[in-house]
Length: 284
Ligand SMILES: Cc1cc2nc3c(=O)[nH]c(=O)nc-3n(C[C@H](O)[C@H](O)[C@H](O)COP(=O)(O)OP(=O)(O)OC[C@H]3O[C@@H](n4cnc5c(N)ncnc54)[C@H](O)[C@@H]3O)c2cc1C
Image 1 (cartoon, rainbow, N blue to C red):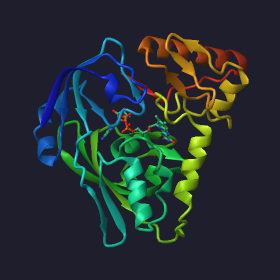
Image 2 (tube, helix red, strand yellow):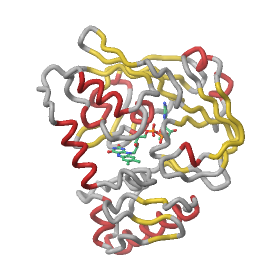
Image 3 (cartoon, helix red, strand yellow):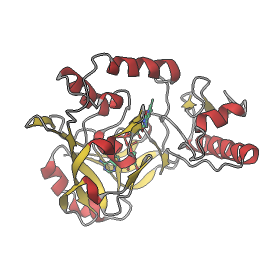
């Protein structure tokens, strides 16, 4: 297993923000995961997928990190035409394209979510009115004592961009249901991609939506839009003009800039609309 020390975390996040990592472990298979029991048991060990919803502080992360970047790249299989077994390191887009090629419906919404299946499970990632946990049959994970366990979906409480995962240290695999009642639509995946290209700044350094949508029926993006603060910049981080719940790092941005811009927007939204926005991005 590769272990990297003292390397920049910028390259491990899509928003390209973060100081140095003390130590990153890159397990490639279950045997490597088993070797990490002592690392898993440490309270501050962090699990990293593709870093598409993460920024790290400018002074870095001083505890161990386990990255799923190289984890079981072959781990994508159909079981009895009923289920898909997919390991946590496979990207959401790869799963969506694989299903599309095999004419399996239901997973098109994952195309364009630039994270891993593990990250998607942890965040209950979703798009176009769907979310990953709606498709889960069971998951395999390592708990905080380092034990490998499998549990059915009903043992998890999930909600919008959230899953109660008190004993989960890291998801390792998901067993997803193929819903035979949905009709396959050959154009759906491409039409979702086109919508993303039109409405989101997908080729810039961002971490997707910075804030969760508040429950009051407004999207965070609409609220920010109403403030007329598109392009508002602090240091190297600014609000995208294409989608104002996306903050862009121009390449010089720091975590300090990002946190100041988040604070600024939160305060303005609270003052104007009396709504408290909650962060979706994870900052460590
Ligand atoms: C351009 C762009 C578009 C996006 N569009 C969407 C969208 O449409 N819908 C959406 O929901 N999100 C979207 N996102 C956000 C992001 O892609 C998702 O939240 C994604 O699920 C994060 O996966 P990741 O592998 O990158 O996780 P990371 O960012 O690496 O981690 C996110 C969190 O999950 C935890 N985690 C990661 N892997 C595991 C694991 N194996 N086990 C346990 N915990 C783990 C981390 O500790 C962290 O707390 C977008 C981001 C970008 C940059």
